[in-house]
Image (tube, rainbow, N blue to C red; front, side, top):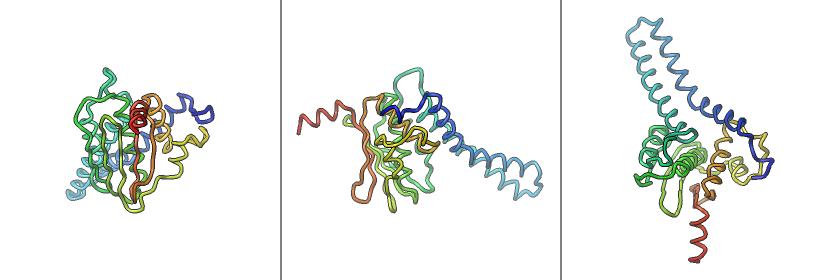
Length: 220
């Protein structure tokens, strides 16, 4: 990345905080609304509806916060490894089963924290490629990471590609695009190369280490 596409650390932190707040504001707001109903409503049916809303929203908020902690924060900061299976469980709770379904094929094993964080951010990029919903398929092995987005009119957002290719100004990043920028920073620090492309009607995000790429070139 050149100097025009590098965010100051304080700006990156601020935008990531905005991204997290954006993700959790809806369920937290729903909890507040449900509590207000419980405070003033005497009808038992309405109170049950409010209670169900609070319960569902609390679970959603918890799932989003757990995912954000692992994808953006210092989850497992006491060590350099994160359980890939746990990451899959957290991602499944984050996505839910209403609009997008998750197929997590990555093995249950301890993996470098930077690798797991990058994979979760690739999942977010894949989800943005299927706004109408669909399937997100995750694979990981010794050759690299892969996330496939399958859905109606799947397409890589132009702004996502621009950030991936470094064709943007740092001042143009917002709370949504900062996630792509952060993924690229993670990849760079972990010595990964991330690419995006179409495979038939599907969008595929791939990440491989420079070492793996060199080995493939030697084989070719």
